[in-house]
Image: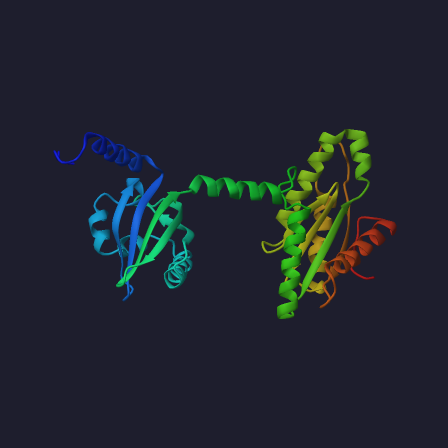
Length: 304
């Protein structure tokens, strides 16, 4: 900035401090203008140069399309809808979207801006912040809250959420849905004889067998202890039965090591009946599981 005798020294110092601050924040201060014809441009941009290419700022002052073209295709419609709502109601703009960097890396950007009407269009004054680390941390926390710590499968909470989603889908579309409940036979004896560490290894091996034997669309989960469940979307009972038998056989033939001998599982399966509550659906599969146990274990039951 050229020296100007009419500017007080303290003002010059404040401007220098403001420039230094905006260059160091993990985002950008901006003005976005949208004309009545819908053209977008950035009259003002200051801050982290990594969000905008070095030579883009002058271009963006006339045409914002250079920046908007780098927004992830899945996020672009949502952002444009938010801009439209903000312009019509003159309410604050708040949105998150993924932005491709010049190097190809994708960063999550959070936008907060306040609009004002200028006669020939809408002008937003706002801040764009790089929140990629925050988004990654939140995703990690969600994964932890939905994942069984020992096996890495979905936990009971996640299973119930997914089961509700699949039941809702089955009701809407009339599509089949099956549920498989699995319980290891005589698991207490493994813990008592070989210890809980070896028992945990059996549970981890069972989780891997579920992932290997089941289909990609199936949703295995650990309910707790030695109890597991599998949601089978778009699957009638007639197709669920051979899948359950294949898993039961794989468990019985698997070498769990440490001299544990043969480990088996009992499995109960049920197909969703339109209109029944989630608890009734689970209860039908659960009754068949315990009948399988009472009738000798190491078997699959699909009948009441």
